[in-house]
Image 1 (cartoon, rainbow, N blue to C red):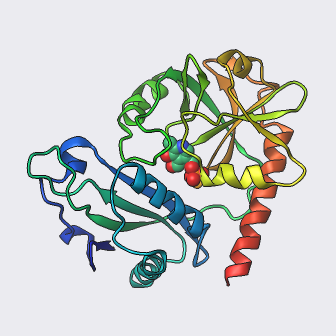
Image 2 (cartoon, helix red, strand yellow):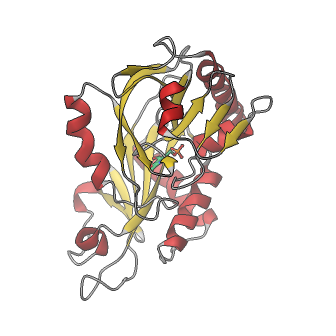
Length: 276
Ligand SMILES: Cc1ncc(COP(=O)(O)O)c(C=O)c1O
């Protein structure tokens, strides 16, 4: 598999970072992740905008403009012969003389084969636990997922699939997904604070005819919800049927998540067709 590092394409095994890079020494850096689907870079404009926003928040300079970035992304996909893949674009804190000052960022793009069901009929049902935590600089897509990685074992031990972060201010997000809650009246809510603004979340907020309120959501509201679901580029929408061992609604994916999944798929198909 080929990757792009700084200014060239090379074999993944030949791609090296200086040992003083702040990403290694301090976990300092940002990235973005999106799908190449049927040869189309899905919602690439949104992902590039978020990549730039994350970089700016961490005071890192992106070494290419958007046109150049898209050219690199397309060329890499061609070199790897992939039409369906996950693409990870990373900007590190750079080589640092004292493992503290920000250096000149290293920029890389890596791909992994990733094929997603083009038309799932229902959201997948999953179980979650909760954990009190907020990420550093949560509005940025930083590379620091220590808590999420560390929690994997606890999630598995408790026979769950994922973990929802919360603080005294309410729930925020999952390690790699955004959260949505539907109350008994069918009203849909999503938190707007201490979160990364997901691109899938953005697509849901744009769906006509389905108002979604951005507001604080307490853990108590989560426990009383008729539906809870998560969104991300890789998972689209998954329905949460149990929280900390307590059943949600009737224990099956609910009608709001099912409908929104179909609307999301429609938007995806429309985007892909418009780019072919
Ligand atoms: C912390 C966090 N929140 C939310 C998301 C979902 O964002 P998107 O829909 O753009 O994949 C991600 C994606 O990886 C994430 O890392």
